[in-house]
Image (cartoon, rainbow, N blue to C red; front, side):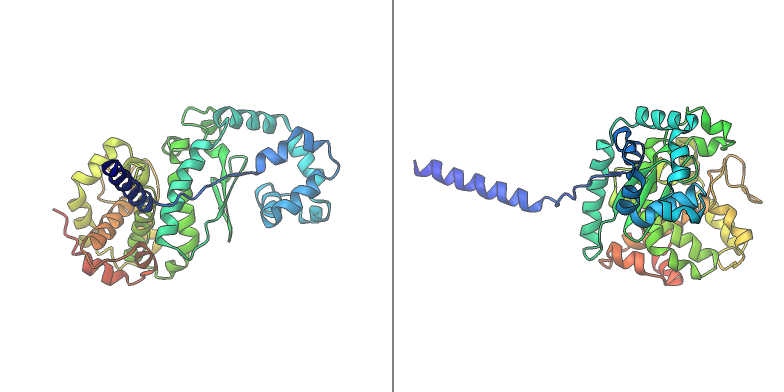
Length: 332
């Protein structure tokens, strides 16, 4: 009897210890703007668009005026004349059907975001988790970032086999990434850029390298399950090339005195996406945006070198020269 009691106490203690070690989950429920906009029952209501305007505020105005190019003069009419035509247009109705077919629900994405936001709150306890909202961008926007809202254009994730993308002259390297596997990484990237793009005042290539590296490190810390192929937007062969040629890439930057170059037209080709890195002296079999890959490796080594640095400290750190120095980055 007493022995059993002790075992039960032990089990309770183990359970409590296990529970206390669990990271608090941050529940995420996506706000479905496109579902509200096209809701057949709501469309019967004469105040449908006014209700949307009141519910969605500044996002509604941005969606109407900037994404759909509706005249600001319609603001006082809640953009009803133009939006009525938009939701009734056959190709838009077909697009809505196709989005619903690819995303019958978004529970998987809410779960992924919930885990990532739990990590976000653990690293940035004073920060507010944004409201995540979905919409149809008419193939114009994958994300739109506001102060408290991060909007996701679902029609930019319909899959690499979606026939409309090539018809819109989207290049094949871009089409390969217009699939749901990229949604989480791109959403976290948008969150990070929205918070830290003010740091791009320094126009040197070094600052751009490390800024891009910090953004990828931020993504990986919040969602460590994201594979590096998705993190960098590489095929497996491109990722292998980048790792195999890491020392050559770094030597290329040093030999061409790239790090302190302040002319974006010269160095942006090393951070922009493409079929490969289109730059003098870089082979066509290269991975695209090799500067982003290099920046991440420097930042990762900087963080791995000890000193109990936190993610928040890293993201707020704009001492680019010191980050490079303390990383002791010397790829072999």
